[in-house]
Image (cartoon, rainbow, N blue to C red):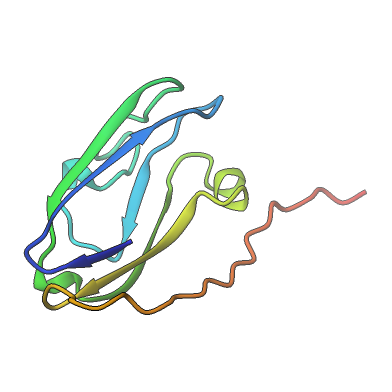
Amino acid sequence: MHWSVGGRVAVVLKNALPQATTLHWHGLAVPASQDGVPMLTQAAIRPGQSFTYRFTVTPQMIGTHFYHSHVNDDCQMDAGLHGEIIVDPQAHTTAPGRVFELSNWGIPQPDS
């Protein structure tokens, strides 16, 4: 995702998983109701339900961040439920640069 300060964000999460989920905006000071921490800032989104995350991009958010699921984190993040966010100080008029994410999320396996 690529945002600019002053922009309004509206991200619709439709849960097509067989389990609950949420989105947590890592490093972004969003309103508590939009923070995606289940049982603390919002109810988990059950299978088949949707939730729209809405907030305004602020100067505090400038930089590179990421988002990730916040329910059953180990399994959901290992399945790829995470991504990058770039926040620019002003509206960008050129194509955004590229971000490459190297991830090594793994579910610990019990000893055999």
